[in-house]
Image 1 (cartoon, rainbow, N blue to C red):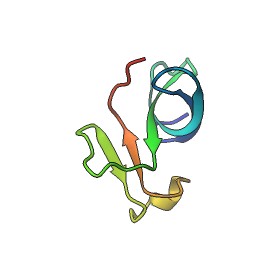
Image 2: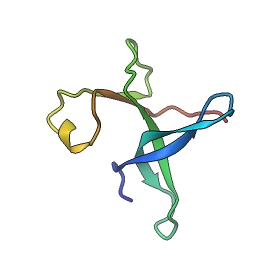
Image 3: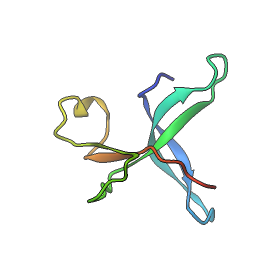
Image 4: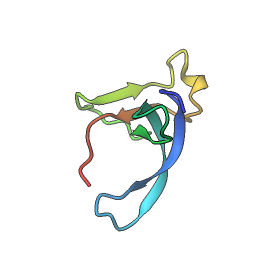
Length: 82
């Protein structure tokens, strides 16, 4: 998988009680010989005041149609504590 590829993967709920399939963007591969990748969560719930580590992709962006996303989204680039 190449960096920038949008995939569906399971993300755990904050309380770890369950998980849900959500879109994510491949941020990087750790090792070219290893199938593991690092991903960032994507949400269509764009915050009114994004954090410094949020990346907003509006549906008005010229390349938005190439993403496969349905509406404006936020890429959550900050760390998640599990």
